Image (cartoon, rainbow, N blue to C red):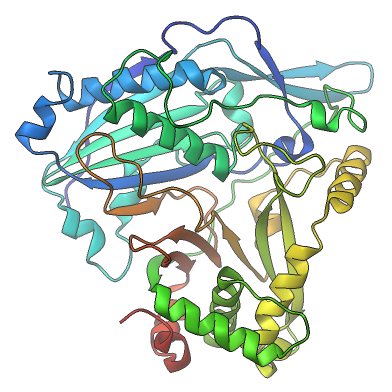
Amino acid sequence: MSQIRFISTSTIRATPSPNESTRRIELTPWDLQLLLVNPIQKGLLFLKPTPSQEKELKGINLIDHLKTSLSSTLHIFYPLVGRLVMVENDDDKTTSFFLDCNNLGAQFVHAVADDVTVADILEPIYVPDIVNSLFLMNGVLNYEGISKPLLAVQVTELADGIFIGCTLNHCVVDGTSFWHFFNTWSEISRGNSTDPTIPTSQSPPNFQRCFLDDIINFPIHIPFLEPGEKFIPPPLKEQVFHFSREKIAQLKAKANAEMGTNNVNISSLQAVLGHLWRSVIRSQRCSANKEIHYRVLVGMRRRVQPPLPDEYLGNAVLFGTVTTTAGNLLEHGLGWAAWQMNKMIASQTAEEVRKYVKDWMKAPKIFKLSSLTSNAIGTGSSPRFNVYGNDFGWGRPIAVRSGVGNKFDGKLTVFPGVEEGSMDFEACLSPETLQAMMDDAEFMEALAS
């Protein structure tokens, strides 16, 4: 495949410039714990618009249209064109961070890979390495948002397609906020409106931080950051596994049947996670007494009291962990594995959230990728996000891919599939593990044929 050629780089600011009503946004423990990991990198693959479709984009070319609609979107999501600010607190030798909505701008890059086709991206068994080149700011850590853009967009023209790759600082958004922004941008682009005051079907973001007022005094003081050595994972490959709606229903029914009538209600996602976990551990040929972990990002918007609105801009997630041994996992069936997920997720109550925040304030813990990956499988994202509704004006996307950020041996990123009710898992594992999974009849039987 060819190298990507960079055509232009622009700074996109909110238009018109946002008012001063919310110039400063405080960062919560949920935000601060992610200072030393990578931004979110997600992107959508589209077929190239036809000449007639491109003419409908207000008579300007596609790239200029996307820039204009992005600027209008950023008037609504104006914190994304700000920067992080770090303050050194001399009195107690700590630091504090906040988000300054200063409209310094987002980065927008127009790139071309004119001998790479849609098929080159989708047809190989493993996700091709060029996908990582469709995103900006690879290797950057979130705390670097003190000097780097919080949002960086790369639009790459392929031979017969368009890839829109977004990199967004994870201290500022979680997956829910990320797709809220993406959904709003695509709707503004599709509507051909450059007036950000014209309402869309998307509710505007909510910047409140008052839900933690009784247990947090802002700004939060944390120890000086120690980034340490850059995390370098072993050689890994990525493969997308597709689970059809029918296969998912079969896994869910099997998991619930195995657990009987013990008032257990295992969800579709929990059943698929249990199936994946067992296959990965089988394929890695772990010793029976090896301690293993499955870490899942659990959404907290509906779990705090009072609940946070879906439009809350920021992080509202906690890492939930299931721990067992390899032998214990494989001796039990699918239902038991999924039930462990079910119990862990159910334990993330409003009381537990408050306890977590109080404990974190006493001893702040800043995650590093190296600390999250030991003997662990991890799943982020959600099959509930609106991914395939992002029509920018020339049709819906045909695939979603993520960048290299926060990847490690055992990262399983879940997306909704193209067909309603289906799921795709982007599995980042060693080539040996992926091949063993392909040879695992029990695992493959549950995949869509």
